[in-house]
Each structure stands twice: as C-alpha cells, then as structure tokens.
Image 1 (tube, rainbow, N blue to C red):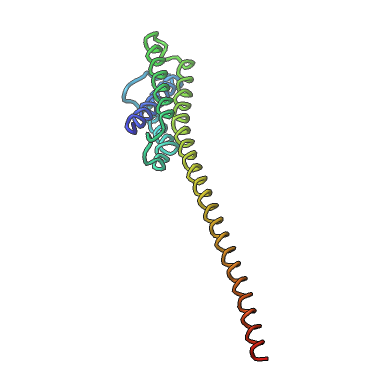
Image 2: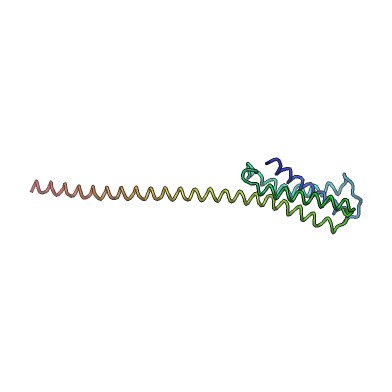
Length: 175
C-alpha cells in the first residue's frame, strides 16, 4: 500500500512536470521534444517544489497505508482521472493547446495537495486520539492522587487526634 501511494504521487509529479514542459514549449513557441531545455527546466522546477512541499514531509509518516484507505482511494481516483483525460487530449490532438494543459497543471497540483493533505489530516487525527487518551489517563492519575492525598489527610487527622488523646491521657496520669 505504501508503494502504491508513493507510485501514484510520483506519477502525478511526473505528469505535472510533463504538463509544465508542454506549457513552456507553447509559451516559448518551441517544438516539443522529449529531451530539451524546456524539459530540464520544467522538471527541475516541479521536482524541487514537489520535494519541498510533499516528499520531505513524508518522513513524518512512517507507515502511510496504515488505516488510510481514504487517502489511497483519493490518490487512485485522481490518478485515473488525470490519466484518462490526458489520454483523451492526446487522442483528440488537443495536447498542445494551452487552454487544455493549464487545467491539468491545476489538477495535478490539487491531486498532490489532496493526497498529502489527507495524509496529514489522518496523522493529525491519530495524534489527537493519542492526546485524548493521554489526557484521560492523566485525569485518572490525578483522581487517584487526589484520593490518595485525601486518605493521607484523613489518616494524619486521625493520628493528630490520637496523639492529642494520648497527651491528654498522659497529662491526666501525671496530674
């Protein structure tokens, strides 16, 4: 599951880089080539930004797939939508039209934010549950300590009265 999650993220990043490359070619009015300056620039920018915003944060998630089925489904659905729409654009020969590529850039960005945003939300929910459990345990410990202090206070009070009784009995014997 972790590998699937990362693969979908990697595909989305690659798709984003490819769309940025095509947009650079359209803006600079150069022809699309698989290995070009536009490709290097586009992919370098995309990979650096995606690393800083997504991949670097994945270290906070030691086990991505654990109880995160919703995150995985969102990633799979966004992958399928992007792939199907991209295939349709290519088949209709609309893949070099800027108006068609810009929405794909936003779709890829949105997909990455949803994928990693839901992952972050899931992690925060788990932390909240752990904190709530800790608070409950601390409350139980506080109540136990409070009862212990009350018992000690009662024993001290009883002991104080007993000492007074003994002192009075001792004074009565000497007087």
